Image 1 (tube, helix red, strand yellow):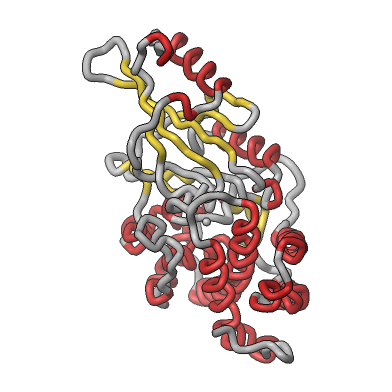
Image 2 (cartoon, helix red, strand yellow; image 1 turned 180 degrees about the horizontal axis):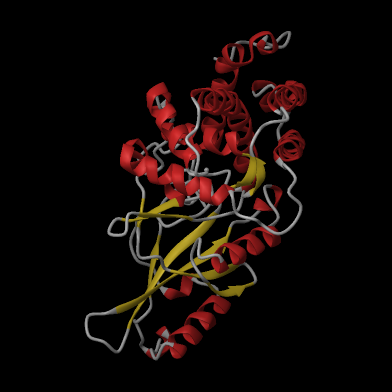
Length: 374
């Protein structure tokens, strides 16, 4: 949803989930260790090499990574019973098919300067060192807490209103077509047939035509707002959104739709790839979310505005299913993380075919020769 096959990196990609045991500092690239030593020195600490008998560097892999490997790094300070913490992110192999890493770094640096996320502490060729945020990463159940959901709605509006430098062009449709091309090139014939990849070009065009109307809200979107990419400071009651690999300008209805779809997932179970769509938010919860989101503009939204955004969001769930369905197919071929990407893709695309007739009406007819998605 940010390395996985372990449980899913807090960003079909990254994030700061719970730890899963300690590892030696030798699992880190040498360039990363140099940055850590430099930071420690700057902060008045000392990190000893393991070769010199040092055991000061504590490396804790964080669960839930599906695009990168993410580690919490700790070492003791001069103060008794106190340790320093940072995050080291090692970029996943083969994921350049999904996003431009340079764009992601620029976004990270911009967000950092805006006070929207962790500070960038250092970069090395295949990763970076980030500030450790003293806040709790959300759990799957937190997304169903009405108080937390209200904070997320307000934070999403703040995020969408950011004036990110660069072209303000919606990238969703080009991204879907590029991912489809990649999926077709990687999939053997039987796999392509099973996932109906030959029908997908037309599906993307149908969605683009029916979903892109002129008065839709456009903003800078996260595009992967699953629970592992959201952190909460429970004292200050504040939300921080992290991990921007897939961020871009987009229809805000897509970002909200994708967030709602993520409520069906729990990436910290024995079967992290299994989705439960009975957990998709009901109408009352969606109405509450939209009202809070729209009211953050300073005006009380009308029932018509809320109803229109709900309708748009529901239709954009289809784009979310295609997006992460194609992501799963590609990931199976490029990612070595322990996660059942193919089953995940199957469920997302099955949901697409199941909901399309209901949401698109006459445009929802199943293509000739294609089964109903079961």
